[in-house]
Image (tube, rainbow, N blue to C red; front, side, top):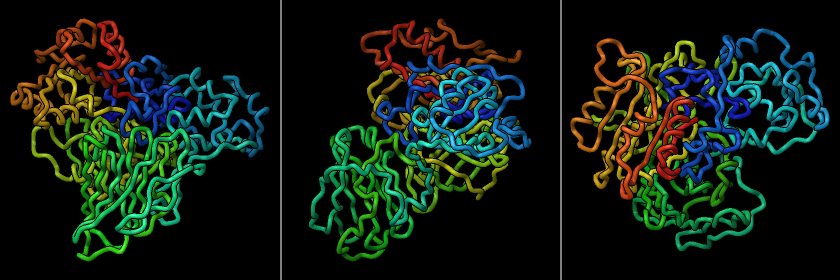
Length: 580
């Protein structure tokens, strides 16, 4: 599902995704709708949120009703906006002059026919963008005449609004808020690279270690969580970095590793904050990393293999980010240059893309999480989100996925889309910019439910792939799985043969296919999501049913699942929406 397949561009303030119908690989909706790519303004969709609900992404089913969509006029897609920007027409409203704007002047421009907004000290004329905003004019007007930086950051600070609104630049705001920077991985790994830590810190936990010097004093804000304790030890062949997180929901997937030369960066996502190990290692190590997590204590062991069997005098030099924490919402946006490993056809208009991460990087995308892809289209940076999937449901799995060296994405190609025509043109070896993961699904919910019922529409099937695979492959799991899969036509059903095969082999999995535009040869179910259909798809409610309902589709689809779930008496703890 490009799980946020709708990667709305300016988030709730600017949803630059032209239309869900055009590049919403995650929400392969049965009825593509340009207005179905909205984000909830009040929530915080932070880029690296490993253990959501704790990670503030607004993908809660209960919040789906807050996402309002409008039908855009013909000729108001993202590509139309790009063309307008290249037409030479003055979109600044001030004749192209660069002004200095104070708060008083900014406040004057708060009308629908004269609207300015300030973002990170820059003022933009958003008047010409009104008709291109998928969330509608009313939604965009919430930022008119004010500094919308905080509002924007609460939704999608990873979006490059500067590229989208470049032609609308009015000038500088005299009072400038602190800027969030977009940085490259190479810059982060430099010894003198940006620290991205809070400067008003207080105290460190670590002390001297018998294996060498520990980190220098690190500090934390009073409200932040207790700083994890760090230690290390070595054997003849390995060096083990130990982090005591004390978080029982910690998973090995929440540890991302990047290495260039001897510069080593481990990023741990712990509840709603991030903790760094940033070290210039004393000696060389191989590119094989092993990460172990104690489920009872949250203790993390990062095991590194020495290139030569000798005793290290110390773990190495602690760099700027080492032993520091930062809140998820304040995290910098990191993209890595990956390369296309393979491409295979899934349906007539969908492809399975395998991307190789850079050498030295280990990133295992957690179950139900997604990544962002970015690429410049006609000079404008376009970003879309796609949920990571497994390479197959029934065949042999790629061991590189568990190693964190490749990512698989299932993407629907839209001929008139903003980004997918470029994706369709990719060949083996081509570079692709990929962000670190984000999401809000808690894998722990799969271990406590007895029945998992998934409602998916089109390519929004992608988040369900990992849920199904996780439950089927877990030998301890006894979860009963049911997929209710909505599509337009039979030819649109993703992995139909695999789903059929899985249903035949497993007594715990079943699948219902429902088509909205079935031909005369279809003997299965037809129609759309209704209360009666949903009720019939769910097991009978009992005190021991332990049900989890998951939904993913275009906004109207998800909103209906939300509405029906509540009408049927299910609580918020019994459902989850994968929604952009």
